[in-house]
Amino acid sequence: METFAEYILDENKTIDEKMEIMCYLERRLRNDPERRITFDKTVIFKTTIAELFIETMDIDVDKNLVLTASLLCNCKKGKEPQKIGKLRSFAKEGAEYLATLGFDKRFCKICEELNRYSGSNPREKESDILEVCDQFGGLMLDRPDRRGYAPMDALIQIEHANLKDVFNRYLGTFREWVEFMEDVNITLPENNMTINGHRAFARKINS
Image 1: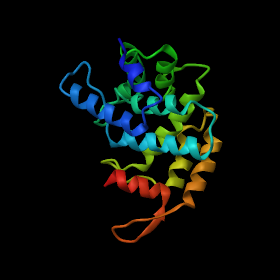
Image 2: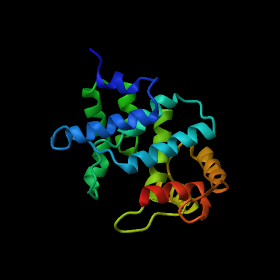
Image 3: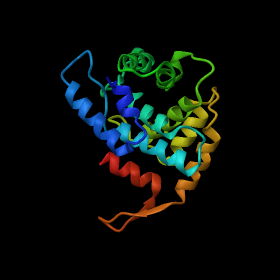
């Protein structure tokens, strides 16, 4: 019998189809305290960032694996502001939960390495993509206590604070991608305003 892992990892499924699967799963498990997962527009935003980054910069990774992991790695994060203990444990809890759905050890390790609290070394290269895209996307989105960062401000925060003392093999390439996207202009149909690509995506998610 096919496991959930095999079902959603199917490379013939588009990212939109995978997102629909996650939406269904989130609704199905919403009232089950033990099994419920987090899946919302912030996850979609961060996954879109990962997809654009991989495609634009021609990153040599299994895109299907990375994007599927991006949809699932925050599954136990929760939607409310997190206490420090939960911030340090949610990725590990998520990895343990994903193992029960049939995902192999490497996939679960990639998801657990979303943040640095697992202490895993060496890190999987796919985890570095998840990390930088998750941090960048999170900084760009509005929160109850602050407005979302501008793209370059988010990048500076990542480089000089969040990931200042750690090695992320894709951080330099990510900077190149952010600078490239700053020069991509999109005209909004509702008011004919022209803004850069990052702001267009963040505006859509924040609205």
